[in-house]
Length: 156
Image (spheres, rainbow, N blue to C red):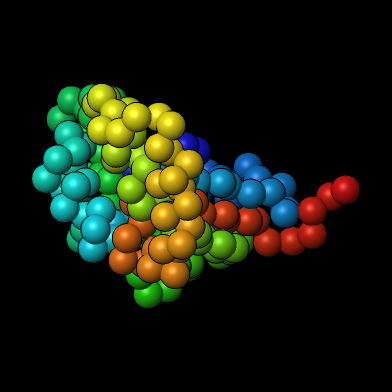
């Protein structure tokens, strides 16, 4: 799921269904926005989608536009807080990995909708700077990837 989780109105329902259909050892791979000290103001004030750091999913009940209705903070709220919020609901799913990444390049490359702020030939330099700053990902990252696995041995 690349930039999908935050568009789910009720992500817990998704994980209940994933738990039902995954084989033991099956995985859900997620790449979604991450709210750091650096990225939160951008996600909250400059990005057109909602960014609610207190909730998972979004509570809209009238007409839903799947292209814009979202909560960009969903993955951060689910996987970077205390505990795994679907334990007790989805006991067969384990949080295997959370990796924070992408500090500046996404934004200065224009994201999905805006023009680039720097010439493309400078991207490798920005990547080097991002790699050097990776110990600070908790405070600087803009995205995360998450691996969730259904308990049990995978059938080979």
